[in-house]
Each structure stands twice: as structure tokens, then as C-alpha cells.
Length: 146
Image 1: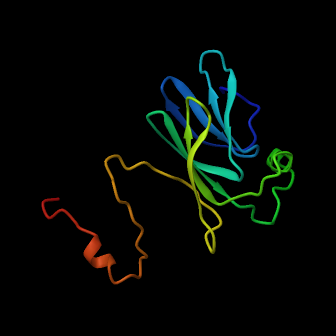
Image 2 (image 1 turned 60 degrees about the vertical axis):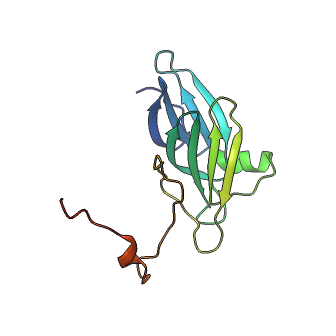
């Protein structure tokens, strides 16, 4: 066990000699020094954190909305109130050197929860295509040599 005082930890990753984890029940991206076990809050994100990908000096995280209106019995609810913040279903890009949020995208409508995120290195124009879209057949390619 590395640390035992996290609230609903999620998505542990090792990057640049540190352990990074989402302290989801509090709303923080956390850096843990594996040798000293020292825990450092890097950034607060308004929502339930799930999904972490690290790329260079950036962390990409996702947040979800509460299922029942509030994050009952979680420190996250108090942290939102202290900051006068509303929870968001969103993707955040966090600068690991400063802890600042470099960019973010909020998703509204039917999407209320995000579960993971991944960096696709070298991809310049990603897109999402519904499974029932007529474009699906022409956008998916399968290597014939496989």
C-alpha cells in the first residue's frame, strides 16, 4: 500500500518517477512520491474524476456529474461548495508543472458520465462516429495482411 487516505481513488498511473492518481471523492488530481509517500494535490476539477492519461507535462482527466444530484457523503460536495462551483461532465487538460487547467471541454445533454480517456499520439483530427451511422462502414479499415 502506498497511501491510505484517498477518497475513492481511481486511475493510478506512473509517470516521470511519480505515482499519479485521481482522488475522486475529493475532486483532486494527486501526485504521490513513491519513496516518501508524500501526497500533493495538483489540481481540483469540479466533478467526479474518472479517467487519467498522461502525455509529457500534461494530464488529461475526465469528470462526471453526480447520479443523484449531489455527491452525498463525499468531501467533493464540500469542495464544490467552498469554491462556489457546479459539477461538470468534462475533459480537462492540466499542466503538471503549474497545476493550472490549460484547456477544458464541457459535455452537455445526454452525456453525464465519462469513465476513461486516452491519448492517441500523432492524431491531429480525432472524431466520433455513432455505431449506427452510414459512415461507419467507410471510416473503419481493417489491415488485409493481418
